[in-house]
Length: 313
Image: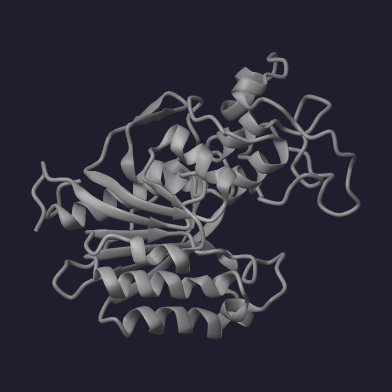
């Protein structure tokens, strides 16, 4: 279907600052490992947040369209090989209000269904939180799956543990993958780590570094919270899940008397050091926490590339 040398075109929805798009594109280094350039080419992306779009343009490219997806969808390309996106999860997450896909934000998955319906890509990838698999969200999960299946796609899902794929963070996320009937079935990538990357291995070299705004090495001075804000990293285990709304909740350093910096949070999310966030502290926290870890996305992308390239990853 797709030769080794051909580009595989991608439309990206809910792109945020570009974590998933960076992973699909490849060509970056993280903790001494090179994640090779893939065949994927992001030809169009959309994101509502202006700040996230600024970061995306600085690091990924100028092709992102800022604005509400329902208004931008008319500008979307008519053809692409792949559609990707992490549709908003606030109504589905453990910390959300439990509205499921009937909620205003998580209901935006319908925009992704509409995009798949219009483009008819060979494969689509939708990412969301573990909460989508919880019992109280069973109806929401089935509705999402049935809406995509109604378009004629073979649809499956799997819960991934990011730490099993070289991401130094215990992060559980669901990836829903749909393949067109004329495309081979997707085989999820197997874990690649016998030993998880620890917090010390991920950020230990930053301990002696003073605050540096240009490097996003800045941190919250929020006092300890009565709820989740007392959590302290353990040096010899991966970092805890990086959250989007984390000003008073982001974890404390395992050795230093402060919360972790945004550069350290970006390391836990597997962003390369040359990826710079075009925002101040609170907005950077939001962008980092909302992102799909690029290294995790790269492994998903390589498995999809193998399908579209006839088995050659």
